[in-house]
Image 1 (cartoon, rainbow, N blue to C red):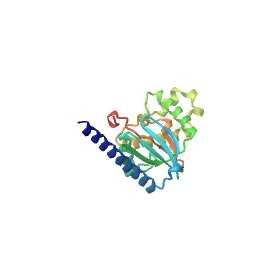
Image 2: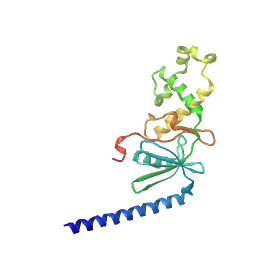
Image 3: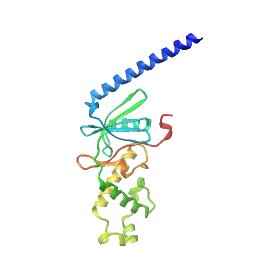
Image 4: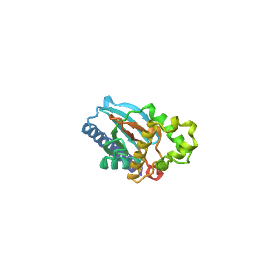
Length: 208
């Protein structure tokens, strides 16, 4: 019995080693395919389900354990909806999920405008997903002292339109835009506002 246990333990070690070797090879192929220089990767930070690296050439590599985020990334890669950061490639390697996405510029004006818009929506008890129901005339009538020259400024109107496009993008994927925050919005190289870190937040979709 003792001999069998030692033999089984040795077999499991060999299997684990082969699995690690296979994963390393697969990851190296993924790097080569996408022209990623591993030594030039720059760590950006981590979240609840993974971490992100700047890999240059306007791209970010995300390593995640969220299956829902991974599935949505695959859909974005296939459908290419303009409201989201472009997804260039995805891969499942071992138990890890990799997503190569477009790097967006994080503009401080985004947070300022987001706060202004959400404050305006709160006066009508509207969450971001119902932005399209905002009544501009009602807001001006009830909050006239906060509106310059009796109208909402053009930068706020433009930002609301951009947010509405992103809300429609979420719905095109079949999910509500409940997780839109200023810190998951950015602008691409043309200045277009896009969302990133998309996840439907379904706890059943994450690894246990």
